[in-house]
Image (tube, rainbow, N blue to C red):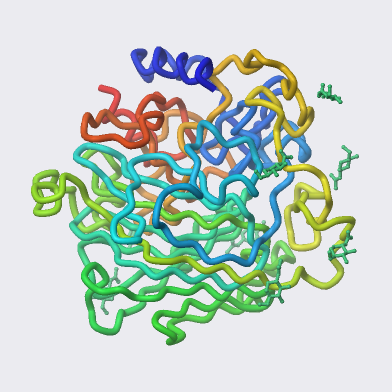
Length: 435
Ligand SMILES: *[C@@H]1O[C@H](CO)[C@@H](O)[C@H](O)[C@H]1NC(C)=O
Ligand SMILES: *[C@@H]1O[C@H](CO)[C@@H](O)[C@H](O)[C@H]1NC(C)=O
Ligand SMILES: *[C@@H]1O[C@H](CO)[C@@H](O)[C@H](O)[C@H]1NC(C)=O
Ligand SMILES: *[C@@H]1O[C@H](CO)[C@@H](O)[C@H](O)[C@H]1NC(C)=O
Ligand SMILES: *[C@@H]1O[C@H](CO)[C@@H](O)[C@H](O)[C@H]1NC(C)=O
Ligand SMILES: *[C@@H]1O[C@H](CO)[C@@H](O)[C@H](O)[C@H]1NC(C)=O
Ligand SMILES: *[C@@H]1O[C@H](CO)[C@@H](O)[C@H](O)[C@H]1NC(C)=O
Ligand SMILES: *[C@@H]1O[C@H](CO)[C@@H](O)[C@H](O)[C@H]1NC(C)=O
């Protein structure tokens, strides 16, 4: 691991432009090559962590390039410490070993998890390592505050089915709800739920996602705020339900939607440009969102699912619909950062790192979820292939990299220089922080 991290430090000295040349991007119309078969959540090819959470089978070399996905686990999470969490550069797919992977600047305080965003940073991301394939997910949360600052609590599948809560720091009286099917942007999918005592920052509220095969409900403090029926998502042209239906990971993050370099539509959605000299920055040194507790209850797998085990979910067809997933006993654990779904045990017995280091851990394992901003600006900044890709509409957002010199409890995140990406917002962030 140490050997691996070192090249990252060296890389951080290089410019984004120089790195872009060495990056292989991927999309549903341009899959990864066999030697770097896994397409990360951010549309880049690699091995190792690229093949774990977020690995998109539709844009990878083949559907078995990505590692099998650890099955859902009924569990309550609290944070007296960060013992259940692992840095995203260290995780190899054993969800029994660590419940969460993270990047950024987490800390614990009074038994709560603080996801922080120090001055000029891109925030913090927590991704659960267990996939959920229908379930009830509940978070006791105090959002961040401040224009341009967004807290997200989302379910995101590897093919970018997505169910979201997002708090925009300029409006502490409401939480936004959203969903996506395979990353297809549809601005009609978003909603806005008012919150009872009208302060999402000062007061604890419980935000639930009740994700069932036939409907999804967003529930705040026990009150159903929104119901999405699967039957209402029928696309009669394509003969399919455009409803979130594939195993998804819970991702929690704080991120800077209001960076001046972001698309105007994104900044507007976030309520304006971030003030890096705000009350929170002055008093605590960072913006922050507070997580008190997270509960996950797994629902039973859909009727008719092919089941040969109890350990992992595996895609059986790149269409990635509900009937294209099997439950198996295939291992989810990679032998090293050089391994892939095509050769899971590569490097397992080797004392030296098999990975070259440069394409084995994606910049960040995260996503903010739907950018309820505006597509107009969102695609214009893309430097790579987003306009030609059928997954160009993907809603993922990388925490990116940052140049903050503030107290950093997770040094590896800032060490990774960002490379090309499908996501325009992400690209905009990179341009800012690497110049
Ligand atoms: C995963 O981690 C658990 C707990 O640390 C350990 O018992 C198990 O052997 C590991 N599994 C693999 C495949 O490495
Ligand atoms: C969300 O709802 C709140 C309260 O009803 C309202 O003030 C706010 O403007 C709405 N925000 C959006 C983005 O629609
Ligand atoms: C329905 O499917 C067709 C064919 O794939 C696609 O062109 C269209 O955009 C889809 N409609 C929506 C609302 O996604
Ligand atoms: C989770 O708990 C529910 C009941 O609360 C149970 O029906 C289900 O089988 C459990 N699932 C797993 C994966 O343990
Ligand atoms: C899954 O686990 C249950 C309970 O341990 C067991 O009874 C069942 O046989 C397993 N199913 C398969 C397909 O392995
Ligand atoms: C599970 O692993 C075996 C052995 O590697 C492989 O043949 C099989 O295709 C895998 N199952 C699925 C559903 O991918
Ligand atoms: C690793 O070593 C063990 C024990 O020597 C052996 O059984 C196993 O096959 C080896 N695995 C690989 C991937 O070389
Ligand atoms: C997106 O931009 C268009 C045109 O600029 C505007 O009409 C529309 O309301 C915007 N949608 C959102 C969700 O901001």
